[in-house]
Length: 224
Image 1: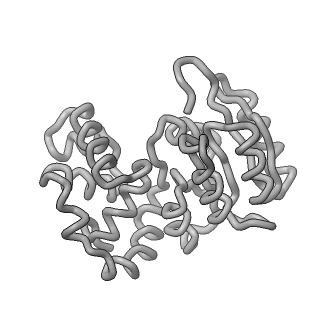
Image 2: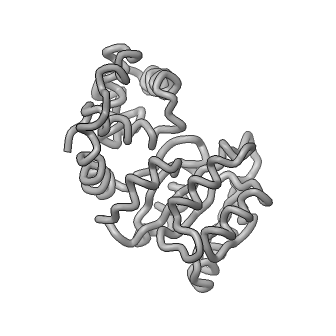
Image 3: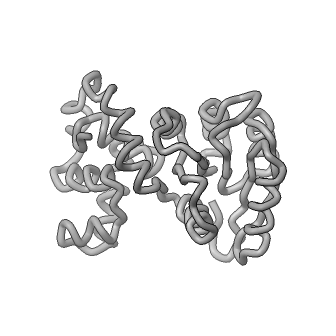
């Protein structure tokens, strides 16, 4: 992750050269963001991530050679790359890959029809360590594909480490709320909400907020 005034280093992964060129032109024109590499498939993405050590890997969901789930798992599982954030672009708002991607360690999903401002915002959000889930994805995809797995989770034991307030906060994270929105909902300051989120992440061994979303659905704190 970038610190202070260091630029956010981005690795672009897409099998279409024209798409990569468009993303590069957009990101190169933006202050505070630097493209440090390009890859055309999942296997190259893993190699480039290990070589360039980017802050964010911007990766298309449809990848040849190695699928996006395996590529994500390989990247975040590489020693020294634990702070690399994977932001996956999808053209499908009913794609089963979303749940698997979050489980594999992706920090966010963004629909490819997002505008330039939304894309730039998304890169900055995940680089800062937060999760990014487009509203349509939060409402439809995660609930659809986690609902099938919720029954098999030992939710009471898993949630026993949390305080009641932390459970409330995790539930609201599962609904896609920001710290500001959680604070307003629970009459807390955004800083206090962030603290509760951080404590819950540590107690539940969640890599980031995206993992908290998965846990919220798995344990039944949020139901479809």
